[in-house]
Image (cartoon, rainbow, N blue to C red; front, side, top):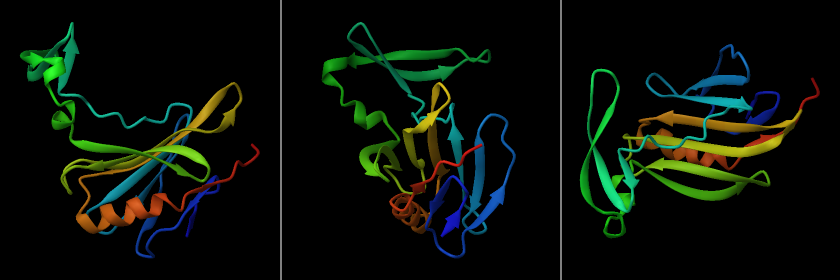
Amino acid sequence: MLDFGQFTITVPATWDPVKVRGIDSYVGLIALGEEDTINFDLGWYSNALDEDKKFMIQNGDFYVLDSVSSDGAANFMFYGKADTVNVENFLENKITWTTVDGRKAKIISPKRTGQGLTGIYIDSVWMAGSARDRFQMNGRNLNAENERLLLKAFETLRFKKIAK
């Protein structure tokens, strides 16, 4: 079990925590061996792990990303009427919802192992002043075994608010 003070998580003994310094939140890394790493962020601005969409829906029409210009502007191409398109086909990751340590949690996993995000996002861990502390932990393009182990480890997350 790794104890990060404000939360614990049970992971394989070969996974090693790596200290990093955050500016406005509690952040860290866990090395999963020689290739894979995961990161976490506990704070007001933790990333909701929303996927960068390669499409947009506008006025009932569905458009796919065609290109990005040198100035960063996205160019979209008409694909079809939105009500005829299965949006899931255009997403890289699957989203499921569960409860972890009594909190609603969004679980992200790649549709294709090794290609995408494996992560958890909790929108409200506890109140911190006038705002909510959020939590996210994720790894990108993990190998099949690390993906499986990380998804299992998410179930063991336990939070404990530390007085500051």
